[in-house]
Amino acid sequence: MQNQTAFIFDLDGVIVDTAKFHFLAWQKLANKIGIDFSEKENEQLKGVSRVKSLEKILSWGNKTLSDQEFQRLMEEKNQDYLNYVQQMSKDDILPGVKSFLDELKSKHHPIALGSASKNAKTILKCVDLNDTFDAIVDGNEVTKAKPNPEVFLKVAKLLNTEPQDCFVFEDSIAGIKAANVGGMISIGIGDKETLREADFCFKNFNEFDYQFFKNIKSKT
Ligand code: B16
Ligand code: MG
Image (cartoon, rainbow, N blue to C red; front, side, top):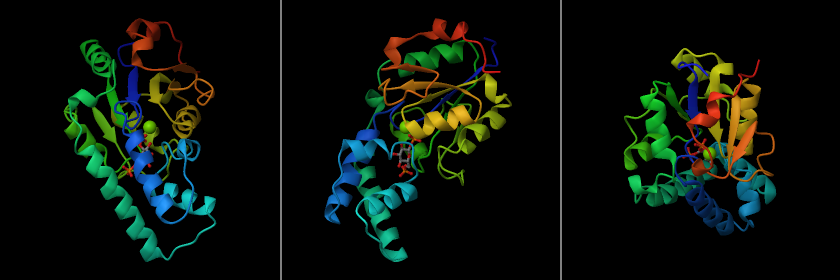
């Protein structure tokens, strides 16, 4: 591994456990319009944009809405979600993440954020990580949602790094697919069976250290 090897992090479910807040907010909204919503459905929304998430929920319930109602519900869900997010502090950064980021910085590796969330910068501010990353690409800057690799390819370009020299940390099936399609090395954070398409998978950041990455060959 060289010093220019880049480390790209997803946000929700990797750096902070906001995935649980998305779940609570979507579940409340789905139930309100008469659609069942459990952890099983939620798994399919991880890494998926807000618009696509509501489209999926409506299709599960065989429901259609006017554009106006669709927009209104998305705003309602987001407000609900932000109410949870605004209570977060740096204590909510997932275990092992901060020390790993600090170590990468001390070794002069470029580090970046690649998130589908339009709230990414608000969240980084809440947890005091707004000055940490060398590049940030979030849901406001992409037109194609994960599993399309656009978000990660944009990050690689900003960092001036080739995709095969990037590690991507992801908690979602869609995000792992995006990293793989983009030609990057995918590191799943979560359940090994759910994230079986990942090149490597760990339960959390305490299961590996910097040393692990030193011996991994790039994908080509
Ligand atoms: P927002 P990530 C994704 O963030 C979440 O995993 C996904 O559940 C959410 O729907 C999406 O962001 C959009 O989020 O409503 O905040 O714009 O995991 O790519 O960091
Ligand atoms: Mg995620």
